[in-house]
Length: 218
Image (cartoon, rainbow, N blue to C red; front, side, top):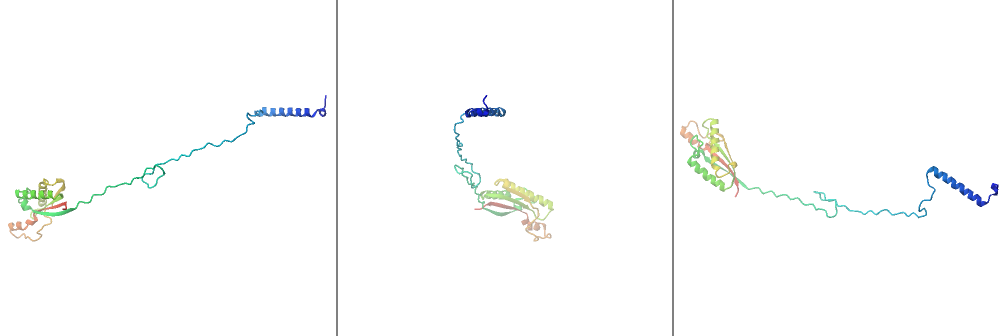
């Protein structure tokens, strides 16, 4: 039997290779790894370039009501708001007409007499032609009698005048009110010590109907 020293160099190398292969096999079996060379192990690894990402420009819509936009192409242009021009005010004129209650009514009455109807019809036609916008009818009495009586009488007389004028001017544009013995025209000019007939004649200016008219000028 040959000793270790008697082995040839080639035999020693073969034996060493066998031991190395055996050790590798044991290690591979323990770790679960394969000792075989991977497929294409001799192929050269060539890194690949990342995929190209194409830039896409997104156009956002314009912000409504602002002078600036978020987009740069095909943006809707803001439109200027237009407001209707206010209409110029209608030029108007006012006038006050004073009618004697003795011409329009009988004594102590709110019924328009024939002469009064003619006066009011003529006035109504003129107010319609002049384009009356609003009419205020105010009735007054003299100072004779109680306050309540005179207030009611003046209101009924004002309503009677309004009713007659509404045949020419829209009734909704006419207001009627009674003021009784307020705002006397005669003030203290007439004395109670005069005879009744003369006193009534003296107080005649206080018994009246005032018609305040607002109409188009021109």
